[in-house]
Amino acid sequence: MSATARRGLNRWLLVLLLIVLSVPFVFPTWWMATSSLKPMSEILSRVPTIWPQDPTFEAYGRVFTLQPFAQQYWNSLYIAVLVTAGTMLVSAMAGYAFARIRFPGANALFVLVLVGLLVPSEVTIVPLFRIVNTLGLIDTHWPLIVIPVLGAPAVLAVFIMRQFFLGLPTELEEAGRIDGLGRWGVFWRIALPLSRSALGAVAIFTFLKSWNLYLEPIVYLSSKENFTLPQALTQYVDAYGGPMWNVQLAATTLTVLPVLAVFLVAQKQFVQGLAHSGLKG
Amino acid sequence: MATASAAVRRDWLVGYTMVAPVVLGSLAFVVLPLGMVVWYSLHEWNVLANTFTFVGAENYQRMASDPGLTDALLATVWFSVGLVVVNIALALLLAVLLNQKLPGTTTFRTFFFSPVVVSLVAWTIVWSFLLQADGGINGFLSVLGVEGPNWLRHPTTAMIAVIIVQVFKNVGLNMILFLAALQGVPEELQEAARLDGAGAWRRFRSITLPLISPTILLVSIITIVGSLEVFAQIDVLTGGGPGNSTTVLVYYLYQQAFRFNEFGYASALAVLLFVIVLVLTLFQWQSRKRWVFHEV
Image 1 (cartoon, rainbow over the protein chains, first blue to last red):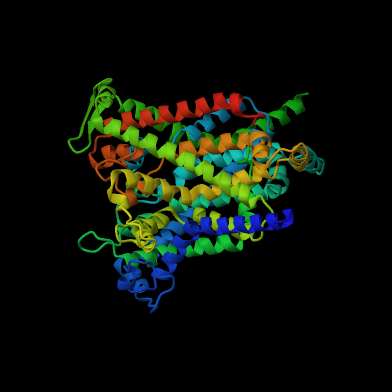
Image 2 (cartoon, each protein chain N blue to C red):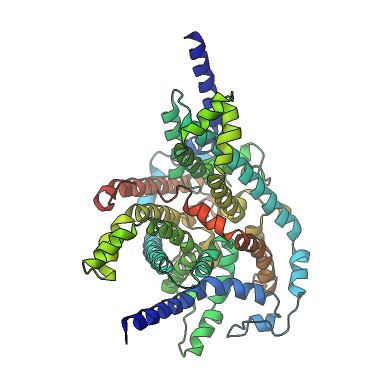
């Protein structure tokens, strides 16, 4: 075999390898979405069917009657949006100040903030539960919004924004200064618009983190109307505690497909944003 | 001079205002709770009985003789080591494959990354169905003539299952970070080595690997610390079982606090978790000089 032919064959072997490797990444989501349209008997068939034989939307109706699912969906959505917007604002301001403004104690304050990177949320869950309880905010959404925006989960965002602003050429800001802008003016009109890619990365992973939050909701929330989606998904069980698979898969599909659709549309920005957010060190 | 100093002071004020939310937040939601958890750990605290008594180091002595904690630490080590090794190896393999000029790399990248945006509990629920004794995985295996185990009900396979589910969920993120690093490796170096007769493996080991080592360090820190925080997957997939084979430290802490209402002992466990994360991070940071080619 000639060298070119061998290289061609190698290429196709690599593509074949990629196809095989992608199965466990793609199949579960595919199977989830298609199985939500199957009757129970077909879901339980030993060898999974790729396409529903006899599609039915019956399970989707029950998703909403067994639990206040629309309310829970809204809870997750508005919490994630508030947390994302709040984190973007707070981290952009702090990141900018730590990168660009010289003020006494800046380094000490930055180190204080960085401690948050070393503290997994599980370490502080008991005291935070006590604080939330003392403030009378158990079974409300306050702790799920305020703590992520101001506490440890925001620290990585601050760090990313600081890294970005450190790399931004100062000339752009000086031009703004000459045009008579003050600090805030430079921040809002020049630095912030330029930081769109870093802010985008912060927005994406903050949204996903809030959307996925599991430990905190099960600790802080007790009534079904206040539940968020990850918590609600585990509640579709029958009288004996066995999962109602078709309903659970339908509910799961409803929580996954919108985010997945947004990702597929904005895939390029998404991946590049993460790759170039300063995370690569 | 007086005006300059006023301007400087105005600048300081803007600086303090901008960092105020996150500084106050860190004090209220990180530093204060850290102090509280240490204080709690010195107490016997039963919420149901409403008792809060100072017991000094008793909770820590209890940790030393608690077989449940030994199991939890072992489970944590198994999970972390398994996850980190498989995750980094697979992420690197995928990144290297996708860095070749092959048809459809964008599509494959999307495939491998897509579980990252699928919500964690949803992903776990689907896998818990596929991994049942008569679930889809064993269905596929039986087509191949292999009798699959009851994955989530055997101590060994339960841990493997949790690791696998977690790897497929998040490996795409590490893959992207590696891919970004690989694209920063200069083509000329590879070309020069090729002319010197270095094979693909040799080039990978002697050129690519050292050049992307800062990223490997960063990714392994993120992955190890992340692996210590695994909770939702355990809760949904195995509930810590069978027995307590998948009860990792975080899950044990949660059980002690919110199932058995042992807030004092749970706080001591939290302090232990914090110390472990701290030591691991500092250790990895220190060791960077030995195996990272250029500074991060």
